[in-house]
Amino acid sequence: KGAIVNIASMSGHVVNFPQPQAAYNAAKAGVIQLTKSLGAEWGPRGVRVNCISPGYVDTDMLAPAPQMHGAWFDRTPLRRFAQPWEIGGLAVYLLSDAAAFCVGSDFIIDGGYTLW
Image 1 (cartoon, rainbow, N blue to C red):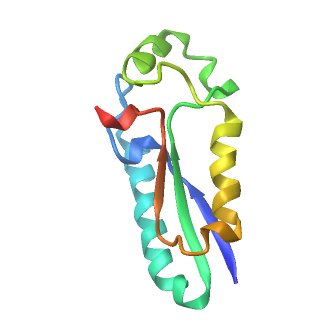
Image 2: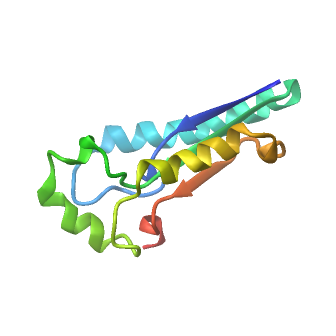
């Protein structure tokens, strides 16, 4: 018995704007479908496969693109980036017994970015 958490991103649900990145977006959507497929296949064996789709997270990865921050904030109702611990809390939940009935699910945690 076990749990697996995949990380996709909000780009599996929307077209990231304004950066052009069709291959990246398609790959993230593929991770979501892989999660659903593996959940269906492995769930009967007691393996829970779920996915986290975070929005923009305040990490060093965002530092090279400060010119994009304004556009990202404008499309995020909470007007900020997530902190790593906010995403980590969801991962801890999914790996715990409290999430024992979650399988093949995609959890969006993006400050509302995908609402638009």
